[in-house]
Image 1 (cartoon, one colour):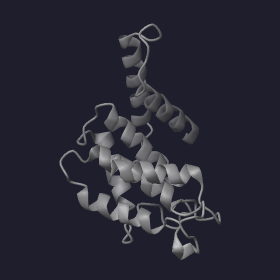
Image 2: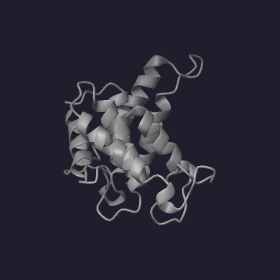
Image 3: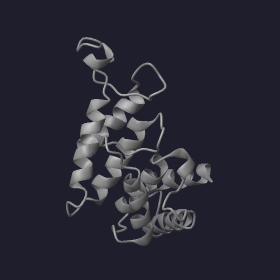
Length: 178
């Protein structure tokens, strides 16, 4: 189920990239996107998640993809996904599954999701809190790093003793979008 959801998200994300007219007709493109959206909608759990066992990330990715493909915030599938994401918001500003070692990853994907849904400012407070949270878990003097250190300013998983480029890029994208 997680692998199939991941595949459909990749299809939707790939569909956001410009296609060459010679490769794909508009009708074929539309049918593919509609099929992926239907597939995902039929696999959403009652709690609004698409993969609760993996945390907020997959649900945030799917919901962001739906929003970027024109589904409104009021769409039932989008609304349930957003409610699930918001339900994982913590008092520290992060948005992640309790006990997660992937707080940066989950929060950054949630921020990108909420930013895509924030056309009327309804998620401004969550976006501000999330941005502040992500900045607090950056590697800096608190981890014994100074600005000349390559790890300075980066982000990583909680279980590794270092920042990594994947988490750092998610952080940068989230801070730009949010």
